[in-house]
Image (cartoon, rainbow, N blue to C red; front, top):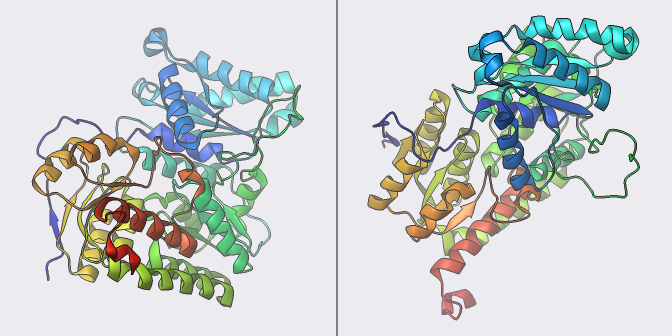
Length: 461
């Protein structure tokens, strides 16, 4: 049976975009490094908009520096801004790593980022001394914002870390995990799985604490403030010596492939472990790399999710139609999971342009037997028009489509980035078997709230 119906983009203008620009993904990745500072080489708006977006989703402050390019830099170049910016960040904040993130303006004017960083390092040697200056890693991250999406910026950042920080040494018996642009709750769930598998991991990079920090009395009144946690620079350096790398985001696997090419670290790309099959695949990948058997404790967690699916799917979810939108990785993972629940993923749409995404949705279509209307490189206006003629029972995606859902009277289950009109979602996992339990409860309660009356007899079953 045919599985997908690809709906092509009909206009060049974008109305209500379903994506944002590359630097956001790079800032997200650098924030997951202990004592690291993202330094944006662009205008102030390039950092302030991202800080606003990250803060309203995670409800945490984001420390992001900017070289504050103005009109004169567009004519004469941004060399002075970047060299002085690196020095200011290095001397005042004493970071372990500075991620120099480019933007549209610095890419278009053709700034020589590598050369400027070299100049900044020479001047830092004179001001701080060679020992102190060399302790600060300065990593160039190319993120031209006029192409691709935040996911590509995240991918470029991880690759830059693999290329400029990772170094060969002694084997460490660890597994590198590239989690993708997920929430703190998801990273904690991944670490929980590694712990049950008795496997030590290097998370590239770990945003779980920096974006969900405990608020405690300050012990750093006179020192630069950094949130606890994050992957250390030493761990990133050591990632070249791991048993293997699992990129849970197959659309952002360049860093993993670079480690394989340069240091012979084997790679497993995706899928994001949402639902039964995808989480099973993560465990198979871990077993393949480490040789560790899967313990009963994980099989019990899997059994709890299967039990919940048996309790709820046939009674409340089977046959209900779903529209899913957002980043390609999470959208494809959610489509497969709702198919496992017996629901029908009738529409999937992403703002990215990705052949891999189409292949993933084709696979979901074959597994579910549902003909899925698939749209890539699209915007929320396209989805809005589509839903007017093809309504679904449920929408799954970010808060950005909340007004579309309200106007068309379609219940919305909030998943992905950003979620800013509800609280606590960044702490709850959607990956792993525990994430599946959270999702099935969320989806089922939304269905009960919208399609069943409070006193309805079916609720008594």
